[in-house]
Amino acid sequence: MLGLVINLTVWGLSWIPFKSLQNQGVHPLWATSIICATSFIFMLIVKPTIWRELFSHPQLFWLLLGAGLTNAFFNTAVAFGDVVRVVLLFYLMPLWTVLLAWPILGEVITSKAVARISLGLAGAMLVLYQPALGFPLPSNGSDWAALAGGASFALNNIMLRKLHTNSEAVRALCMFGGAMVLCGLTAAILAATGHLAWPEATWKNTEASSTLAFWSLLFLVGNLGLQYGAARLPANITAVIMLGEVIVAALSAWWLGSGQIRLQDILGGLLIIAAPLLIKDKRNTSVHTA
Image (cartoon, rainbow, N blue to C red):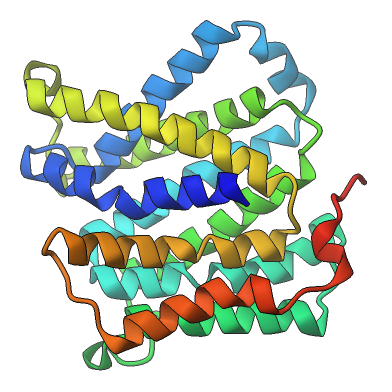
């Protein structure tokens, strides 16, 4: 569980560097691609023979696809849609996890799994809900991208569980590679069509370069934490724990003066934390080995 907490903390705080880089002319799509490229290259330097494992296990490409689509869809949705609405739709992810984990992992949809997911989602909705936005039904391209991003993230975490016998290094390589390629490709297409600026002379901007380097390290640590946790816990438990990112984002925004803590935030946070702790079954404590 600690690995997942490290990962959700890094991602819950990621709005800080992404916002800073955006102000410096580096869009989150470009930033994500650059950060993941840095980690991707680092993994190849540390373990250059990793390619052999990658190409000997074709199922790893599903992980690469899931990670790449998650970042590309979510960042595109945030770029062109209402951020709160996008996050609301993205964090319907636990629903997709329950549906996909059954055919892929054989995790039966039990009443306790449904209860955990429902409690966690209720907490996330409380934290994120704004009356003016209404019920989050997809109504435009950004909404659909956010929904697809959540489904992709569910696939990503499920594949981490399924591929737990593969090394953490090759799983990390797939995730960084997928985000590097698909975010970079999406950004290039949007830039070529005039919807996004090219990250001109980013390497000449000392502040931007330092931010990218520092957060490349943090994302590497966070990714390895996700590898460790998601490979050892049932997918529906991982899905609920990852909702804690909403809490971290809300608290950090409040702490830095970019948001307010409301009663609904406190109640929602308690529901998210309580979901995996109050509703347990024997399957939660075992490691799937099939």
